[in-house]
Length: 111
Image (cartoon, helix red, strand yellow):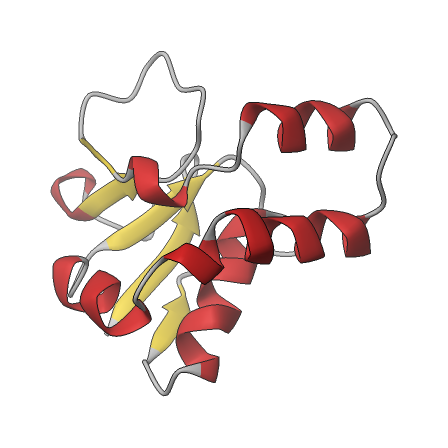
């Protein structure tokens, strides 16, 4: 099982957290650069150049399609994947969770 949450949540132990956010100054725990969105993807989305759907398509093609979901799940077993956005907000963390579930890997959001 892999979990997801956001940095400000109190639902996880910091020792179990893994940042998948590209830019984090305060986090001193584990990171997973393989799941970072590209700089260009982040910029295009934040600048309003692309929609959520376009972001989703690009994140899958630029990042997730190049990874083995089973291997990633093994490496992240029991960990909590973290980024900034709250549970109800659009973010790449939710795309990672969908990707895991589409590949028969249990992934649960800790709200």
